[in-house]
Length: 364
Image 1: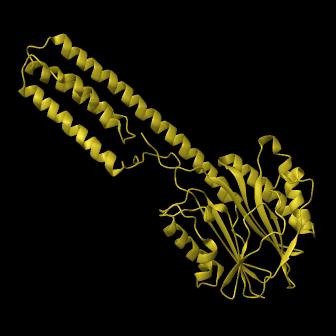
Image 2 (image 1 turned 135 degrees about the vertical axis):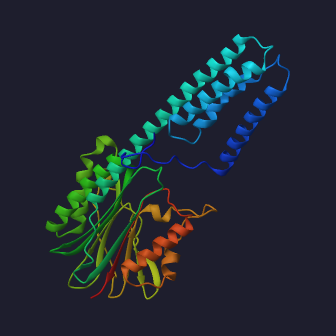
Image 3 (image 1 turned 90 degrees about the vertical axis):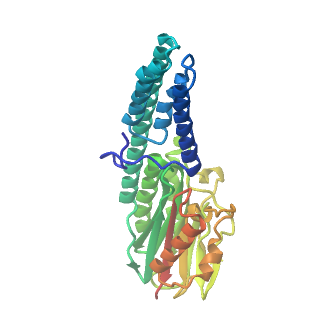
């Protein structure tokens, strides 16, 4: 039996690809042809051993144990007594051997279906737990925050992929609004646990540290304590003062944010590349802030590599900067809806990696 995402009941097995479905139908047709030929042919010969393929065919594409079991029992009844009465010149021992072979293959196929269904249920349950933990961890940011309007979109990867470790946060602090977008190396519950550590440290440090580079240093130190697991996190931190003026950025090995100003999109690049969180000690240095223009009406977009590494049918990466410049929406939520729709259309409806987007528009 198969189960839905949380294991509450039976669910349909994945539909077979068209080519596989046609091959299975062709195999069934050959099997029926073999039985008809056996009945119509010399009674001293038999094709009964081919019926051992019946439970194998029935087990393809199903998660219900009774399907190959029923097919195997039906094939056994075709051999004994139908073919045994038809092929009178064939020793009874041959028919019995064929029947026992069908029953043995039936048991194997049924056990295989049960095993696959059980493993799928365990994987789906693990994914549902990870998704629930992720949903609890990633709180929606406030729509308005100190003169900023914000919106976020999180896109889960294809169903067979494990939950990723993309993270985001937007906080009102005594030093203005502070933003964080990051991507944990790895997948699954371990990645979410790491993301929880990063977000917890950021939520505390962002409220008490005046220097954004010091906040990044504290995040690195928190990650460094997890180094036995050989994990690291790429992240970008943004500070936007409530009183106006330039914003500031600390980029810890992450993709550069994009700023759209008067229809033009530019990257906020770091003069000197800096390492991801947990790897700062390898350079023996500290993180540095970089100021950049972020004026009234401008839109700032932070994102993870699930966006820019999405590919089209030709294998080309999604050109985020070009697409963003051509979009007409100005409100962060509406703009992100437009980006998501365009991204999914570009990638053929699904992504190979989780993707997070955080858009911020300066209102004052």
